[in-house]
Length: 247
Image 1 (cartoon, one colour):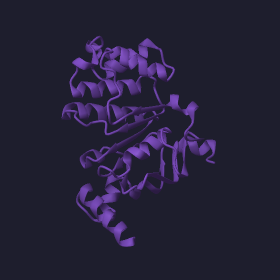
Image 2 (cartoon, rainbow, N blue to C red; image 1 turned 30 degrees about the vertical axis):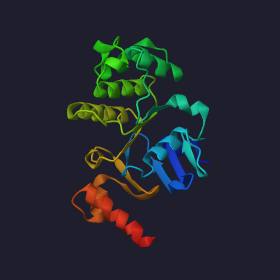
Image 3 (cartoon, rainbow, N blue to C red; image 1 turned 180 degrees about the vertical axis):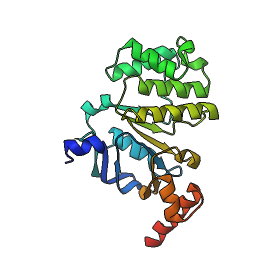
Image 4 (tube, one colour; image 1 turned 120 degrees about the vertical axis):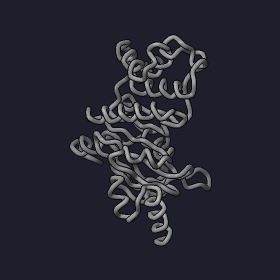
C-alpha cells in the first residue's frame, strides 16, 4: 500500500495492470506513476488502451490483475469519486436540459450544489450567456465546453480528460490548455488522453502507449532525445519499433 506521504506527491499509481475484454488485451502489465500538479499526457493511436487506462483510474473498470491507487485508495473506491473529475470521450450531456441544468446535475452528483461554483464554471468556459439554452441547440464545440464545465464545477483534485479537444476549434483548444495550466499551478493533477501528437508538447510528461503497454514516459524533450528524433510522432514510432524488437 502506498503511504499518505507518497499520495501527496504521487496521487496516481498504476502497478502491473492487466485488463482483457474477451480475447482482446486492452492493458498489458502497465505500470505508471503520475505526480501532483502536472499535466500527464497519455498518447497513442486509437485502440492503444488509453480510454481503458483512464476508466481504470476513475474506477469504472476493475483490472483483471494489478492495482490502481488514487489518493492512497485502491480503486474502485466510492469515497474517492467526489475528488475526481472525469470528462468522457463521448458526450454524457442531456439534450433536453439547459446548459446550467446539466452542469448543476453533474456537480450535484459529486456533492456540489454551490450555485456560485456552477456559475464560475460556466463563465470559465464562456457559456454564461447560454446558461438557459437547451443542449440540443448547441454546436459540437459548445457541448465540449459544457462537458468541461460539468467536470470543473465541484473543484476536483484530479481531472481526467479523454480526448477533450476533439471537434474543438483551435482558439478554444488554446483556451482549454491555458486553463489546464492554471489548474496545475493550484496543485491539481490533470491526465489527458489523446492521439494528437502536437498537443503532447503542452504536457509536463507523457506516456506513450501502444497495444496496452507503456512504450516510454518522460517529457516531450527527453523522449525526442532518447529516440534521437525531431518530433514526437517519429519518436513514438521509434519506441514502438524498439518494443517490437524486444518482444
